[in-house]
Length: 478
Image 1 (cartoon, one colour):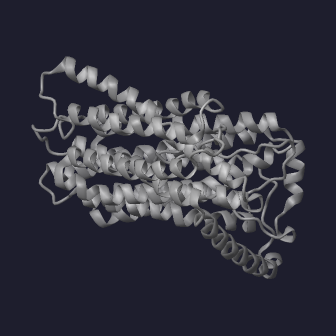
Image 2 (image 1 turned 180 degrees about the horizontal axis):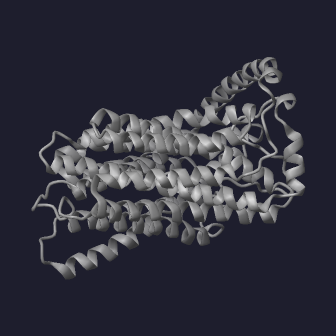
Image 3 (image 1 turned 30 degrees about the vertical axis):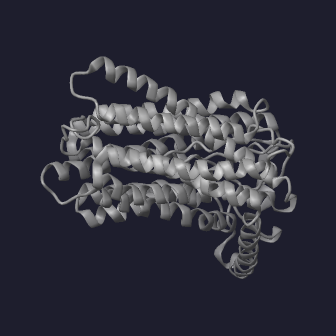
């Protein structure tokens, strides 16, 4: 489940814009300074609505692609879970690689073009499948979808940060609204994608293109004072900026690896990646498994309509987000490793409950209902791992104040790498034994996470406790 938000903690903080700072001679600060004191509320609304629409379209598109591939499998096509995993790998790799690059470009060339590029790439991707539904184009479409997400997030958050920089209160409210809208958009996309598939079949891709177009229209309405200079004026400065940025990027990567070799981070990173892999595994493969040819031995394999799959997936996304909110109440009372331990306990409980649920017989309605409720409770408990790990990373960053931004930026890397591995490797387990194979892979990933959390606890046994402080988690799942 991929999380996307940002916040500034201090009153009057300078606009960070995108992920990479550039020299002041090309960063166009004047317009942003004006925006800090005179926020354009109509543009803020347009930006947030545009974000809602692009999130809903992306989630709906992901659901439709899974259902389309499952329909090919049902019809006797040679489509396997490994292919679904490959499409997930292309999506997450494009997002992981593209975000830093688009962050740099929006600093250099202005935010607005890349706000518009996001829905443009998304609409292009879905149009390919709508017009020519062949498997190679599905892979290209997923890669373009990843680039769409990578393109839209940095300029959108940069713009919101610039518009609210003069007021910590306004910034907190706007960023919270951004997170809520993101989750609601994703959940709405999951649900609507399944409903559209049941009503329209392959033609359901066409309305998604129009949703992307509506998002593009909203971003067109955004008035941004942070504009790029004329091409002739930026060529020389742009070349210098790119050289400077490349040097900073190299130094940043080197510093990150140096910090990661420290004992705390070295034990935290594998555990965090393993849990993110669980998220990538289930959100990449469960739609396909539930919609594929029926397997009478497994309750969750086959036999579900698109509407049911979309609603179930949306509920899971909402439950996971609610769980993160509930765990926020524990910050300050428990330290990060304790929350991680409880969350991993929830993950192992979820594994056993899902195995029992998936191997229930048809007609055992009461058993299925009870196990479904228990699975929801276990998911709420499991959701605490991500904010706890992020809080622990913030504690590690306190030891490296000069590299705090660079270190916290690793959150996106861990999220992307985890989902990349979960989506890719999960295809082999799903081909091996359907949902049971996914459950086994989830248990193995849980064991990896538990082993490294145990090592992390042992390292600091007898030392002062690290008390978890709330750290904002990006609201992104797909």
